[in-house]
Length: 135
Image: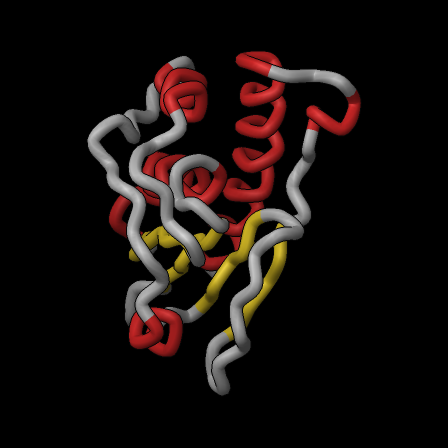
């Protein structure tokens, strides 16, 4: 049986997709091949994203934003886009799903509290996905 693979994609690859990848690595270990990328990658990891992941024992501080690799998109089992802003063309033979993640700023919640809510939303989705990929 081959190892399932997932690519998490957001726009800058500095926050949500990096959080999802870090949380998946923690949840699934080496039972899932995990990648992340951005459609318009930024230059660094979001400091608040890294901080709230450290609170739950996940360290993404050494990660760097990467662009989407079309060959990787073609080769992974699943591409998960995070948020409403991501635009990625479908690829035949690759499954795609979108996570319309919580956006607390729309409710006036910002800063570290916003990022904790985003983390918790993504963590719940990652736990569900890890379980689905194990089947």
